[in-house]
Image (cartoon, rainbow, N blue to C red):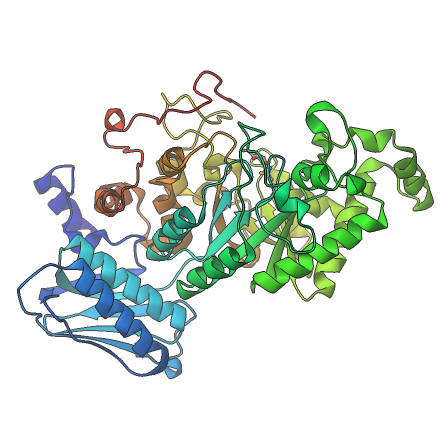
Length: 524
Ligand code: TNX
């Protein structure tokens, strides 16, 4: 099929070179073209074989009717079948299109949902005309994530929902929500109202920005919205560092500090600290049904200078026979891991937690320090399950084009091509540990992303390549073909009014204005 596609590419030039039919993203595991076209016209008939398939068929009919403004009649009907007995793996589906009928099949609800999303994408791209084909599809990785930092800047409910829609269309299934950090605490906790009356005030650029946060009602609404799209939401409550917004609201549990790092950590020894954390976790657990809670655990050494002088902390280190402040940090992490486990959840932490000696049964690790490959290896050798999210190429706050000024660089930057090629360059490193690699995730840190326009610009189109790397099995992955298909998906982003970076015409999509334009943050 690849040969046929290249011919089409050569014949038609660069922009929109392929038949819409073959531009489905992420690229399916297997796709074969057939003869003829199915036309989705007025009042197309869509039916399910009961239960979830019925619900989904109604949703699909609504989408198609909204999408299409055609007077032509439909050429056939669309059938959705959920068949548990077919024994297809979770999330797998088949989609068969003939001129007379479209059949979407899966054993799981998620698989049927992805069949629907794939079909809707084909209908949009073909403007109602879908070429006959047979798709058999299943993901490469079970963890296909995106992380949004709303502590440094807050983007709000509608933006989050729009991103969840796009993630679902790309068959991504984890939304990691970084809701707490230095500038702001972004989620209502009933027991600790100062977290929002005080902790939610300010953002990275303006410490006086009005309080911005999600109420518990908002959270329930967004969690349900995501669940309908088969996206799990994982909240992150960062500790013992990156806790400034909490500790300035409740200084009695602050680890102290001075200047820039004042209140950066929790007080690591006070019982009140652990009581506070436990109570907050209870409210988070009541709101988020995910089996995981992310507790951060990163970069504690940035702002724990006061641990070295505080007499209570120093006495605690002696009493517990800890070697030093780093061991105290590890004690803290182990204690929280036990707490999370006692509440029936699995903890996730950044790769620092590998050094803390937390049991690999109780935790998952996000490997982020691309310059420390040995930390990935250590995690794997110690039996941890790992999500790959290295700064290079999976941090969205890194620039994506050589002339871009605002954003991070670290011996290079993160162009879309590098994301598409990921994780192939690392595969030697985790050879023999493939089972422990759960998947990958794109992290949007928002220190230098002050508004929705820059958020879109940094996220897209790179998120599409993340989906390709996370979903498309290696035998079906071809990054130059991916780039040729990309213009079709960009049209869908146009329809949503997303201001993305256009890698085919960089001058047409200049970097949006930013408060950091005269102060670019380069390098780590
Ligand atoms: C490191 S990734 C951090 C974040 C910053 C990010 C900026 C991680 C676990 N910690 O707090 O926002 O770098 O790229």
